[in-house]
Image 1 (tube, rainbow, N blue to C red):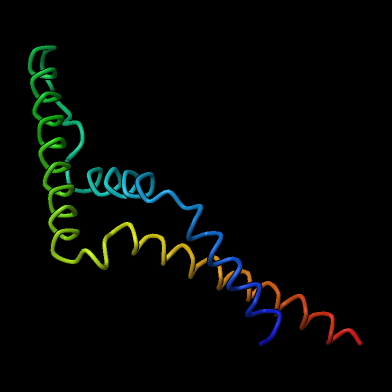
Image 2 (cartoon, helix red, strand yellow):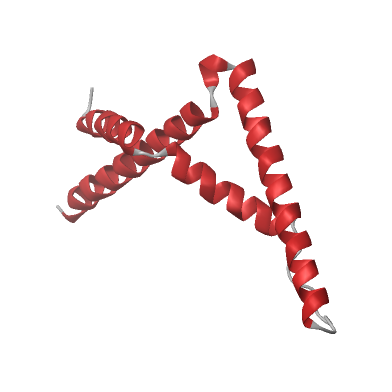
Amino acid sequence: MGMDCVLGQVAFLYAFNQVKPAVIIDKVIDFALDILVPGKRVGDSNWWSHGWKMIEQHADRTSKELDIRGDLRRWDEEFPFFSHELIIRYAAGFFASTIVMTVYNELRGGRMRKR
């Protein structure tokens, strides 16, 4: 087993244990809500209609967020062995492992080419 594999495994384990799935899920849900829920509308004639539309937008956003979180909860109930938190942890570990192995091989390959 080469040094790149060992470093890749260490990076995977470190990222797997250090990643906070709840923070990532919150960011992904916020991003999805920004896309799914339309923003402010132009042309509000008075403060009352502007306030009413803001309330509608906030209600739509909250409703969609609850739907998304409900879908995640159902996923976890249906596939307890492969929950969304595990998916995020595995993806973070794989990403960290790939980066470390690539950087190590590039640095090692760069030294070999100079000789």
